[in-house]
Length: 224
Length: 149
Ligand code: SF4
Ligand code: SF4
Image: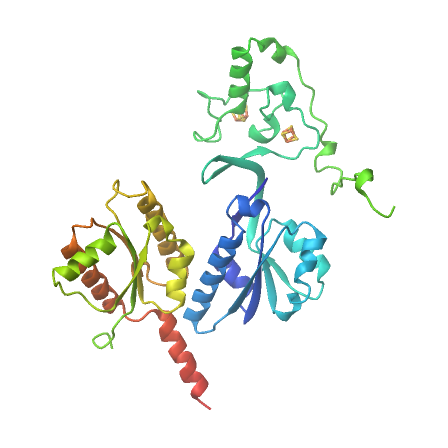
């Protein structure tokens, strides 16, 4: 899923400093799973904003909404009858949410309440880690399911680099060297020879190089 | 002002310890300030960040959570969860310029009636010193302003 972090309360307060009423819209997708933009987080943000503004003596009216997903127009449409009743709308979805909202409701101002960070998963309750960088051409089968693109700090195709130290990456003692893991796993499985193959530089055209990416599934497309 | 100020405190008390201790304090005829409004919860682990924030939003001058001794939670780790949530709210209050001391977490057993009374006194004194929450103070100034033609 997409992992995100909430922006600081100061940053969000600043976005809506001129407003007296706003709508905070959460998303039941990824940001609910990573506990950043679901029902509970919408309530917490709303309460915090209200307390902060009440303290300043300029009360802010904050209404709450929660959409199934903010990355699908049909769910975005569900707030159409109220979205323009506010001076601004804060989206707690990943970066896609406020963009879909802005496109659907061009007369409204939308602000992102979260910083969208990476594609990852929960390695323990409350801890998420990056696993994929969305490079567009998956090669992890060569590396026993360990991704050197997302998980090596230098995205090396033929590692490890000289900085690997006792299984840790040279950037920080808290970061595993994924190449150390790849080599160990190959050794455990008696397949170290796999790594004699030199992987050519990756073709990054499938990553961000080709401009904004698009996925088309003809069998799903209606009306042409 | 602070001499006449009577704060409102909300205490989230676990059924198995703090609430039982409050009962005991009652049977022991111990005096403690009437400023504290007690909300009984099945376990302090049930107390969420939003409950704590709402208490402030709704006008509490101080809030505290009272759970079992660490390691003695009826539901194993509810009190440890509550401790982290209290810490989160402390940090949030600090960020928005409200004294973090207005919220705290306490641990006691059901046999500690006198400690229950002590905590109530300690928190009431602390909040009395801090004065009313800036929320009520500012809404007063607000309505005063509104009253001025
Ligand atoms: S190789 Fe590319 S697509 Fe596969 S996991 Fe790594 S970043 Fe993601
Ligand atoms: S130490 Fe390992 S993870 Fe870090 S940059 Fe070098 S190969 Fe990549």
